[in-house]
Length: 405
Image 1 (cartoon, rainbow, N blue to C red):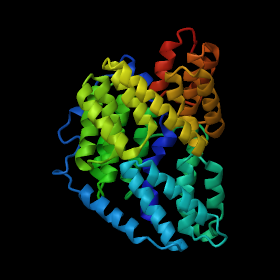
Image 2: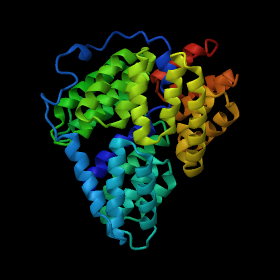
Image 3: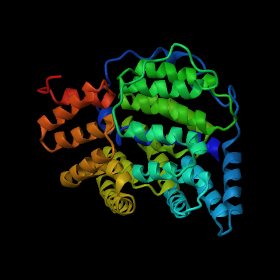
């Protein structure tokens, strides 16, 4: 389980490090940066022929077998089931898998004799749901000799709760940690508003991956696509989402971003098909709202209105179940339907839970939409003072011409 937990955290750290929405930047004019040279290099993104990994079908078959085998009602069986469900959720994005994994892990982590793997699993899932205090409490229960296992989760939570100085890029990579280091450095480049730097590091990282699991490479290409989308280049991003889906055809994170990019580039028929598949697979109201936006852009206002009502009901349900997580993920939806009071309430709650750049910029987005330009400017200055200038910061700065930065 430990190997999975380490990568599982890095995959889901996107929730802690990226904005809840990239639509404002993606719909704005592309930022004036030259096309990253790495995008023109052959072999980027790597194909399965150039870098073979285990087939996604075999990975899912193995996961399904583990889930089916973990049928007992004892703690070991239910914790095993929770872990396998959470792994499947990372690929398919099915909220039913996440909810059941959460329920089982929470129950068994509450036991006084909970094993280290149970506490680690619960901490990982709780932090994904932005229940950071619960995650830390679980990690604090680990025996002294097991505390080293908690380092990655603690680091992820610390990043979500502050805007710490962005580390200097390393000239030399630590042997055996190259993939993870390059991945993290790419994220640092994005935080500094440097798409070329991020792309160079994403490009290098693919050559240092030596395992057989397909998800890390699919995730890496998806992150490159998300970076391009955040900088206002959905047309460039499409190639990377397609590459991720070639390697893992049911990878929901790549699919839902592909659907968004296809809508932004007016490939409405294909975008609709992608969205409908990922909605059926995940049950996620965010993607229902995304399809509604596509339909509105395509001129199908009646269907867009119906989908928005469906999304509204879905968000209300998720907010009731996981208010901390959806304090981030529901804000843009309420902005889109012009429910500024709810959007502001959620953004403020998110800022109480998290003090990273994305939380401040989300509050700025809400303040700007609500006519509070001075408050929005103040948030931008807070982010800038910490050394961060991600693409959403630049987009907001351009929309706040009187903000002297």
